[in-house]
Image (cartoon, helix red, strand yellow):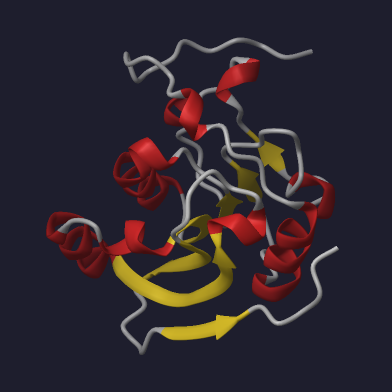
Length: 168
C-alpha cells in the first residue's frame, strides 16, 4: 500500500524532469558503485535502478512519496534525480546519507560555485562515470551524462571512468 505524502516543494513538477534511466545504465551504476547497507532510490521512476537493488527503499513523487519528506538516515542513495532541482536534491541528499550516486548531466555537478563550496565542506566528489552524450542514453538533451559519486568526508582526488561496455 502506498501512503501519500505532501509535496514539500511547492513548485510545479517539470515534465522535462521525467527522464527514465536505460536498463544498461542502471545495471552498470549498481555493479560499478556497489551500494550496500540501507539503500534509498529517491526518484524511483519506472524502477530501472530498483530492479538491481532488491530490498532497497524508494521514493517517487508521482507515487506520492516525496524525497524531500524523507529524513531517515541511509547508507546510500542512488538514482536519476530531476535535473531542474539538482542543487536542492544534492543538498537534501547530504542530510540523509554519506554516499550518493546520481545520473545527471555532468556539468550539473559544477553549475554553481555555491554548490561546489557546500559539497567541499561536506565531503567531495569521489568519482564520475561517464556514459556518453544524451542521445546515447535516449535523453532529450545533448550534454555528457554521467553517474557522480559524492561521499561525506572525502578529500581525495576525483576519479573518472568511461563506460565502455556494450549497451543492451
